[in-house]
Length: 352
Image (cartoon, one colour):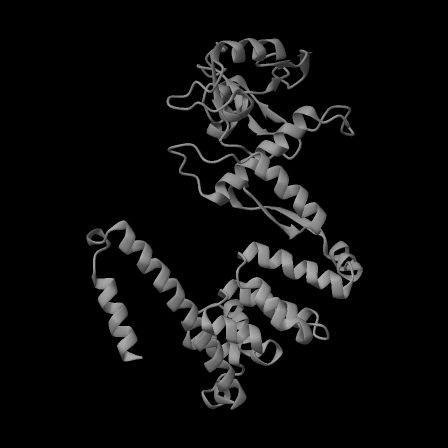
């Protein structure tokens, strides 16, 4: 062990700037393989410790607790590593292929899961399954194992019933007005959701520094806004559902302290967010007297019309932000000057 640590310390001490691209690639490949070998050893040694009750001797209530402490890892990850050690009995051929490097750790996890999910059929098919997966990617391995599972265990009616029972979505408001989303989607709903997000997530343009999580967030926002703009079913109020804001002109000009809140929930919205939303929206004017009595309600208008959008697209052809050439269908009409200062419609910008 000391030799391994010394070798790693020596590698860490070498600056990557001194290495060529080929050397870096070789190091990455070797380190990835070494990491897999380490994963095999940790799983095996944890299993041996559990078999002899070593975790109790060290004062830990379970192998998972012992591994979480010794390895300074989360309980979830420790539990997963322990299950890998337990798979030695359920999937010995897959475990050997994993130790030899013929399959990756991710592929081994998929085979271990198959062994646990279909325990009666897996032993007789293990050698063939391992042979098939050796040359596959992780995603293709998952597909192959799912096809095999359905061939021996049916289409999964019970699993579908479980999915329908567990399906659900939670949406909670957090500090600062942000929302936290958590839930379970059925397989069909998940596939549809992923397909929609993929359609709204083209390859990032040069200079796009958003993380994948942030890009998925922006794609979800685009998806919601597009449905709100084009959905046929009206809401219970007789209008298509939209985010509705209540504001005064001072807030549009950038001055806080007046009215800038959501129309139905009464949540206060910061001025910058309000002005961003107001750049491209429908507006209904309401005049009040000093006693808040309604004097006049004007009809709703949009910042731009459909005809104006077509004319601007014909003129600009693509996004007019500096250095951006995203196609017109990815763009919104954007005012050069904020509507609080005027309504000159001259430029389109992408949402993302």
